[in-house]
Length: 223
Image (tube, rainbow, N blue to C red; front, side, top):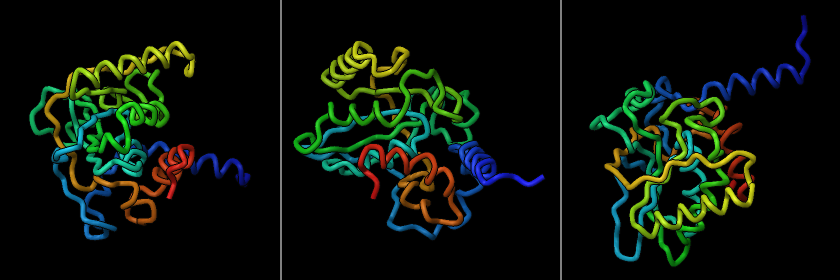
């Protein structure tokens, strides 16, 4: 039986999306093929800069979006909010360490406010689904804001209230708001993932093109 073009395209999209944020087989495929140096370390705060930490499903997506904002100096993908010390990606994927996939952002508040970062945070994922973003399912994909100050906590809670009252989403926001905990940077092949793999035959091109690129385009951030 011959598949129609529409059916074939649909099946292709499903197969690409179902691969999700699971690149273990890609990690060592072609490690030298990078567009720029990747450092697996937490952002270092300097004078006039602040940190923000967000969990919004697969960290590839939110990193790709926030990293392109004017005023953002660095975005590092990693893990936070769990009980296991020095977790690996394989540990996280089991879903029993308690960590969330997060992105830690170093930003200049004079160029981009924390409120502005939060506004992109709401747009880049669905904060009403518990422990799930699309086909990425598990507590590691939960929506979370880890605040670095009482001011950040107040702003996060105020925006959640505003989002709920405005009925932007049909269901209430379930985003976790917690005090920042120890941040564990993810392995180097996760860092700057979209830019490293959007045209890399050894990377997860499907996820980049069908899941990440449309979000950047929607936010007006596509390169």
